[in-house]
Image (tube, rainbow, N blue to C red; front, top):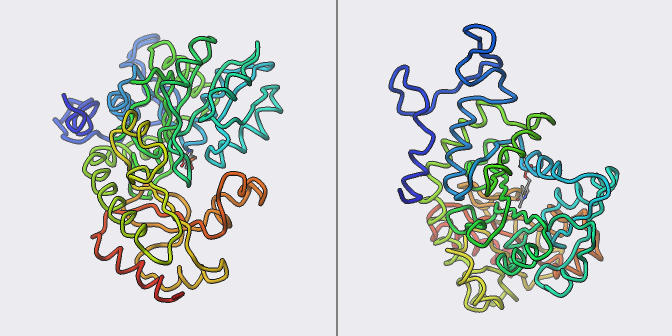
Length: 381
Ligand SMILES: *Cc1c(COP(=O)(O)O)cnc(C)c1O
């Protein structure tokens, strides 16, 4: 089966009772035993649930992994991953990862005796220099948010293998439709399903997928032990979203590609960040690693920071909001919104400015999106 077909069918028909074409929601917290020690494979919903299983089988198939565990949030999924480490371990993480991951790694993990070094993963020499005797893993996110820098998955994974380190990839931005980290030797893939996998901005969720059965089982064991597995309702919603992942991603991408090209020509835009542009400095790597470019882009507007509120206010379609990956187009200023906790020095070091604007391109008609941005530019022109 091709991926488009798997998204629609895999895991879906778990219940033969009434020949239902969609997966039933099993809200039941507990499942009865026919006699002690004999049940139908489920006993308690935190540990296992047929609706959640359907989602896990589906996404594991799309990523090409052995098994998955669906969690209550993306951060829950990341927390389950961190359970593979113990006190005294050291982890290397990218220095431009998602803010919530940064907070967990910089403020929570050290309290548990796990040290984290934040390193520019595009610099393999720097990665090598940060590997110590107690280093256990490398945490990668690519492309980065919001400047769309790309990390070479194959290069980092092979360096990690030489040192017996686990590799994790947060694949939220591209989804398995456009990037399959397992193909490059990554061990664990995770998603905030809140974003593209669900795709409709109406649920928060996460999922972790293991390349091997052994890793998948350990992650499931920890997710149950710490209690981060998701509810059957949420699993059902995300599975409903995943079935349309492929046509949605194609539309997000085609809109984003046209917006990026249009913005690049715009006199009031200094620079556009999108992996689909010829001008992206990592063109060769992108073509080797990504099957597409997704819907996230950013640009530096050529206007004083004080005018950006007017730019946003003039728009009627683009919604001023954090988050991403839904069918509606969102716009934001990372400097004062999603990335504010990095502080001014951190923001500047990463290459952002108050003029950096991030777009999560929705699936509306491209002409309406361009007209809306024109309203914004007209207001500050
Ligand atoms: C949103 C996000 C997360 C966290 O997911 P939640 O569902 O908000 O907990 C992690 N990684 C990336 C790249 C994200 O965009």
